[in-house]
Image (spheres, rainbow, N blue to C red):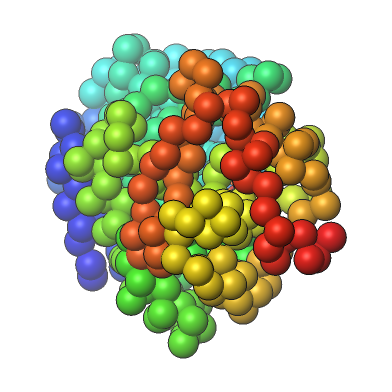
Length: 357
Ligand SMILES: NC(=O)c1ccc[n+]([C@@H]2O[C@H](COP(=O)([O-])OP(=O)(O)OC[C@H]3O[C@@H](n4cnc5c(N)ncnc54)[C@H](O)[C@@H]3O)[C@@H](O)[C@H]2O)c1
């Protein structure tokens, strides 16, 4: 088993082990004085894993209830949170009781937000079951929901008391979501770890999934431990996301998944960096090649003007400028503030992107 310690304001451990799902009872017992546990899960994950989690918790002496919501990003809204509160209150959950998030990033973000706000905050444990959630969203304490006006506009920083990662759950994850999660995996190599980027190039990530999860989680741990509330270094985790979000927004959040949009965003911003002379030449080409290796897209039909306009509405803007995450080279990243009025010009290039459309 791998254990990764996170030293945020409220420290916790991340455990990576095949089959750890069935040990949730003993971990919850060790970490909490709870009597009751509410497992929050979705309609795809619950039929596969809920009974095992419920049995493990019951055998450790907890009273257990479950709240199952319909799977998918569309359900990530305040109405679902109200439904979760209802389940928690009806089950007489108190401040010492806990929530277990069993599912992908949508489940983790919502269960975490319910935990952050119910009774002004109760503890929760993450059991991430998608690749994206195992390498990224379950770590760092960002929780929340979408509003009709945009993604993740309401939320709270609320760290879990533990994260239990069971790589075996990926065996049931549809291939499209494996591909999607690889967008974030490649991001970690780009921003912090050239050797990891090379490793992904020379190996099949899924054949070494425990090592891949451990590397991504360790990088995220290091970043969020130094900058829990995203006032500086944590912004680097948004590499590829500004233009990726723009693509998601322009496609009305359907047609292209988050990880795929991030892949295109990484290529575009690397090309922009090369064109502006701040990114080593050939960097975008290397990202394109790795994204293709993992079946991720590397180009979009949207114009630079449309992308810039969509990005200007992003919540990462600060007044009249936007913080772009750029690479010096693979494995070395930095942020640069660009005035919104100059964004279109900044991202307009004559690189791989333009050759493709
Ligand atoms: N909090 C953060 O720091 C953070 C970071 C990145 C992304 N996110 C959020 O994460 C969400 C995306 O996460 P996601 O891609 O995991 O989405 P998701 O939770 O919708 O899961 C993807 C799909 O896979 C299914 N699924 C999950 N695990 C499965 C398994 N083991 N077997 C079979 N099916 C399974 C789900 O039911 C869903 O249909 C977005 O809402 C995004 O905003 C949060």
